Amino acid sequence: MITASQLERLANCPGSFRAPGFSHTSIAAQQGTENHARIEDGTRVAWRSDAQREIAYVIQTDTWTVTRLGESRGRDYGISKERELIDVGCTVDAEVWFEGSDVEIRDFKSRRRVTSAARNWQVRIQALAVWLYYQLPVIAGLYYLDNDEEDVHTFSEFDHLATQQDLRRVLTALSVEPGELATGPWCEYCPAATACPAQRQELLGILDHVDIEATFRLMTDAEVARAINAAKRFEAIVDRIKTSGRYQVMARGGIDIGNERRLEMVLSQRQSLDSKAMSARLTELGEDMDLYRRVTKFSRMQEVKK
Ligand code: SF4
Image (cartoon, rainbow, N blue to C red; front, top):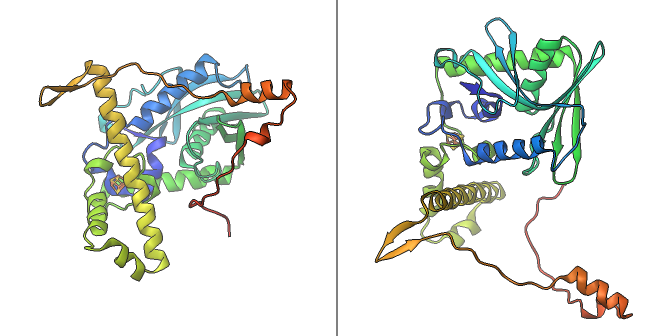
């Protein structure tokens, strides 16, 4: 089964379709499901109280028809294995239908910023599904939970036709020849990343240098940038290994690690100063908080616009 959230990766790295572990549910997908639960609870966001939540659609790409499976289905699309390169599933986080006018949909994100709504595979597929179903103009977008920011695009019929063409191109490529593995930003949440030979080769390529600092001094800007981006992906993979390990320690109530030692989850707490309360108290006493503020300057690497 192909889902809209896999398409960004499949379009860029067709080989990942046959990579080991690709069909497993990733930590990112689990986080996405937890996110949906939060939205469902209405504890975090109220985009529109009249919106329907978590509506699953399946697009049949051989006939360009769509099936609306209903609300709150989680990841249950009911797609048979045989039609994995024909049927494409997607879940619309929130949908409002304005009869005879248009349909508005949103995909909620709690993690970092993703590709803009107009070019985002997930949003494009959701917009296509809703358009095929309602035959009405679709306003689709991303809603960032951390600061209530919206990135919205009005999808025209040309946009939907372009999505259909791109989707068919990707599915055809996957059915004919899965292609090579290609590393890039889309690797970050790839379920196959920890077993991916392309990732390993890239990591070994960097570690292979006897003196990394000396080698980096001789590299071009582009080579240094590539190595930094690769390192970010490896960090993400290491984080996933740690998080998965933690889940297992939690789920199993602890694990033995040899030498008569175990890893267990223990409740702990730490104390910190409540700077807000301090500030309020100092203001009450007529003292300026700035007297106690110490500024430490440091430099950090950050992406900036040219
Ligand atoms: S980790 Fe990256 S290169 Fe490897 S299979 Fe996944 S998407 Fe492709």
